View 1: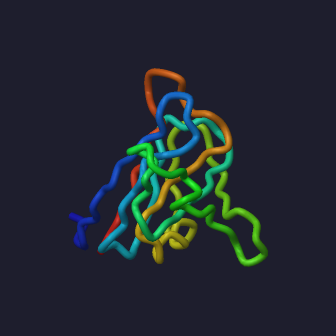
View 2: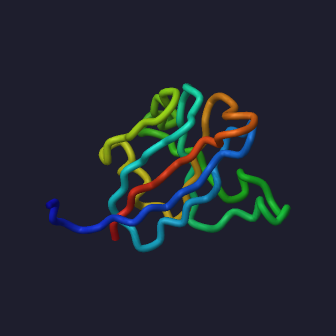
View 3: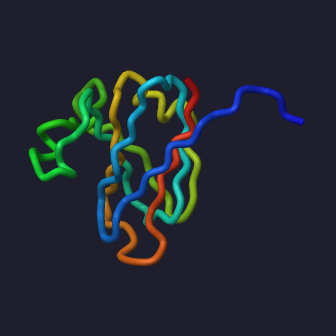
Length: 125
């Protein structure tokens, strides 16, 4: 038996032929892990915001609310996204902790039909 805290799961997808995930609301969480399924290989970028994007309702654009997460020299913070299913270590994902809303972007379009690319954030508060 494994004893410890039970993490919660927040699941989102990238739509058919898309490159940007749904929004993840990270309120109340401070520890993260990331699982991916059905991904096409490429680069994974992180978009962050302190407010809910107005994009789904048609008001505003991604840039109105979200910023591409960058490192200390201005380069986009990027992770290699292997094809298929993967798990990213907590230290790679810890950079999202200060932000309320997060979206994941990929450098290549994901599945055009069938199995959508899924992102599962394993979170603890």
